[in-house]
Amino acid sequence: MGKIMKLNEAFLHSMQDAMKLLRTRGPQEATAALQRALGGHAQPAPQTNTDAPAVTYPGTFTTHTFSNAAGHRNYKLYVPKHHNGRPLPLVVMLHGCTQDADDFAAGTQMNALAERDGCIVVYPVQPQGANASKCWNWFKPADQRRDSGEPALIAGITREVMSKQAVDPSRVFVAGLSAGGAMAAIMVQAYPDLYAAACVHSGLAVGSAHDLQSALAAMRGGKPPRARRAEAPKRPLIVFHGDADATVHPSNAAALLRGFGAQAVVFDETSRAEAGKRTSTVERLKSADGVDAELWLIHGAPHAWAGGNANGSYTDSMGPDASTVMMRFFLDHPLQH
Image 1 (cartoon, one colour):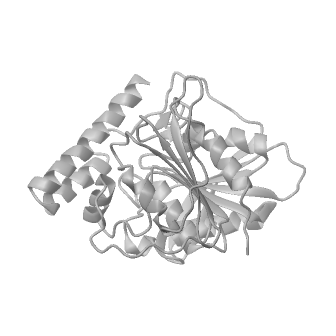
Image 2: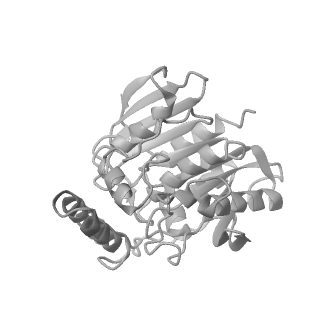
Image 3: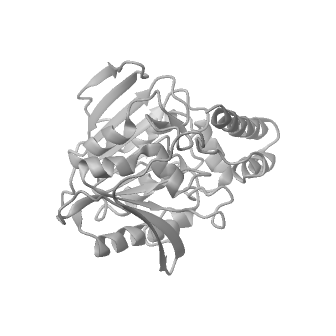
């Protein structure tokens, strides 16, 4: 755990240096610093906790490759053992920078939830060849559109799993952490016919950036240079964000929900706490068109998956159980045509 904390701190220091350069030296120097911070040269990637015992589950966890006109990506697929062949929900999990499928599965414990709740989980993998730090390229215009770049690959993986497994097409969901969370927001906006709901953990809104410079500004909490009006939400959204996140500013959580507009109604705002856990302020929203959203602002939490297991990187065991809360939200919101 100490090693993970030191690595996370090194990454945060690199990001803070880049932010200072943006203010004092200009965008060229800041962009170079950001590339170093995200490129894996300034610090090693965070490691999982090798002292913890390996966790195995009774289902199958297999590796596959998908290809289309946009390129190819590997993915890992978890199919639970304990189901009777009936169509199951499918959850698409998009990892954060420096992570991979095994790391993200271990940290979020989604394979355990797949057995408990009866769902299939797929983990698309972003290779280092596509991004030096294995981040999904949420800030590139070509990777923010339907049927283009990485969204086309992720949607293609989703459809391939649906064609080969017993999947309920009304219960297909997408979730992600950090860069993966930003990509999950893109996916649910670009493919509302495919995904019933999305979870964005410590991520950013669609259109927050269009290049590395604007990505840095958005992560810092600044407004995008060419801000566009938020689109009306088409599908339910649940957002988790730590208010002590020093990598992606917590203001990005509000930006994700801006599409719910001034007419959104706050149904419930409470401070929740469990023994030994962080408190969270929870807001339940509903758009003018009746689309649901939830915001979990986790007090004192860093840039990490809330309630995650130390077997994976970027996890915060003190946080509320984001995976369980997310699955409850997903299963309550099947696709409505």
